[in-house]
Image (cartoon, rainbow, N blue to C red; front, top):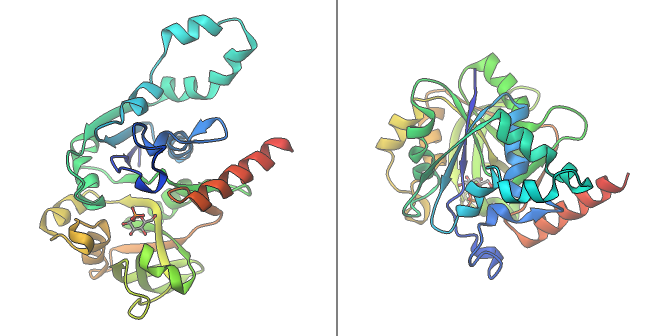
Length: 275
Ligand code: G1P
């Protein structure tokens, strides 16, 4: 059973400055809901009830968001505005939120490693990067699809999608063999390769199911691209042993770490709210 989900949320969000100067980028709203709440809802739909958030300096709003606000709730009690807090109350009631800090920005692999204290090293767990906002209007959410696949293959699962060749240097890129429709046995992974040397245009997207042995692998992984400890490199080590599956998910992903993707997501949810 996968019941725990790590949310790396310590990054500075420099692409959104000055908005993110004093505010966590994960709290930027798409319509009236912060990005990280979309991720938490997706994890909950997938069966998780422990949300393990890796925070950093200036991220206190995330902790307050997933807590009761007595003063506010008292104020709007009995008014139509109460309705606006129904979803978040459900999350607070049904999930446990745990936090630890990543003190230095040493990469996604390091952030995930920091989560070991929160998720333990006995069971597989999920990872959601909240600025990759994923939706599937036609069925199960992306993480739920991945949990189903995990139940079949019992190894690490990485969400993937094809990206334009000129964008491969923004992603972890996957090389693998398609073993069933949209499912790849990964043989190699490269973090943000040059366009010329990229093994494919299959990019890792911010949803992972990881088996707990990944922590030991991360311990042995050296800093990679940009001097950071990359989860891509740790996964590549596992992939060489045939222990990583990449999954071309059903649905759509918005890159809410970029202004363009953020606006696209906003328009998408706005249109959806009007029908
Ligand atoms: C991270 C990962 C990268 C992955 C991407 C997905 O990069 O390091 O492998 O493809 O997320 O969004 P970041 O966007 O944090 O630089």
